[in-house]
Image (cartoon, rainbow, N blue to C red; front, side, top):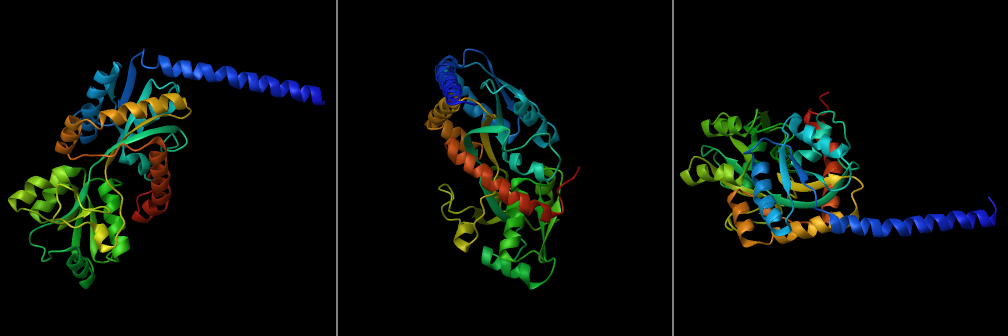
Length: 328
């Protein structure tokens, strides 16, 4: 290629890039004039579905968007997630994802890449977990729990609601980092209901459970709690220490977030993040989420991107040690 040809090629590239910029801006200005399909990968009534409906209602009121919630349960969220991964990156097909987005690919084969095939918009919320035990367990602190678990092999059974769930991840991280793997045996159930029944009956002695799931039984004295799972105390449970205070950094917790297909225009990502951020600052939204056991996060796209990278990297190494991944 001679010099003039090179200059001509460069000129065409520059002109092309300049012509695309106004088009992208125009697309962002026109965004929302068509119905937006929001894939929710759980059945109606589940915790992620409840959170989605709490925030999507005010979002439609504030923006005037028509947002159609499409509950596509199945394959632990993979069906809905794959639909979004394959959708046109125009912002009109979105995913209201939950925490199995970063665990499922290491348990079952999925037809998408959980990082490269998606555009992170914002982490909406998180459901804090508690370390809860049956009242017959003779401990009053995490320190005493660790000592009991280390006193003899298989001294405690730990209920797991679902294989690969955030509660499962948190429990296994705790066992790994506290050195209690020999003393605490994980027992996996088919859902939160059966695992809670097992804990209440004493079939298992401990569990990493969500705040709304645990609260009725904590108030009645049928369970007791030792700590919150996370770096700091919860503002509505200020008397309860965190695992962070015991030196354990465990971020695993059920979360909900907004994702789009990869290559979505940056202008639309920024617009959606800003609009959702304003919704999540509304006192009535914060109050309704709290009642559903969810704390507002409202992370930036960059912050959520970093969280996805961190979780996927950590879980790719951790989950195979559970004896779960991959189940093809």
